[in-house]
Amino acid sequence: MTHDLTPKYTVPGIAREAAGRLIGVLRMRLHAFNDLHLTLKHVHWNVVGPHFIAVHEMIDPQVDSVREMADDVAERIAALGGVAQGTPGALVSERTWDDYSIGRADAIAHLGALDLVYTGVVEGMRAAVKEAGDIDTATEDLLIGQLRALEQFQWFVRAHLESAGGALATGGATSETEAAERGAEIS
Ligand SMILES: [Fe+2]
Image (tube, rainbow, N blue to C red; front, side, top):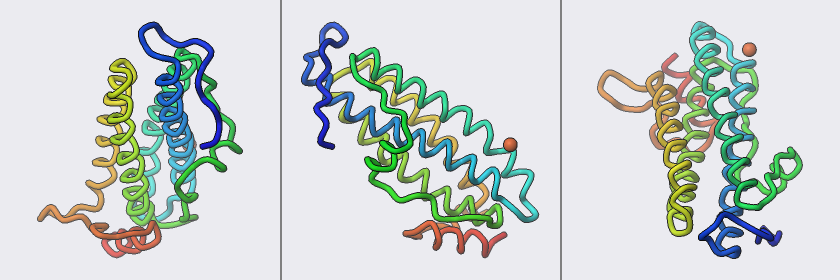
């Protein structure tokens, strides 16, 4: 990212330059959450097949929770003296991942693809927790709680893809399309 994110002021006890680095970390988390709650709604709207209602209804509480996560991260950025960049154009130009690639599809196929989406978000959160921990325990604490909730949501998704023996249908899939195809095989 090329912007200078160093704020004119920040919370007491943190250097402005360190706050700027932290704001950069949170900016990407805000993009990840805004992307994720829109993607979850897209899945909510485009699931079809015998598992429609279970998946359609499972998704909305996740949307609400992820929207709250976005709000909390945005307001932490503001409290740190930064700008909470919430516009779609900034999200699309700065994100480091691709747009969700599945349109209308079987519910379990969507869940296969969502498993990969959550893996990307959770990995990003773990890295962000580490980076925040070096600068600010209050921000680290916020991110840790969000990480735990996201891992629980990924478990909800994965439970649909898991065999009684404990194996994941999507294990080893490297793209959303591949994960969706593997999910569709067990539905
Ligand atoms: Fe709805």
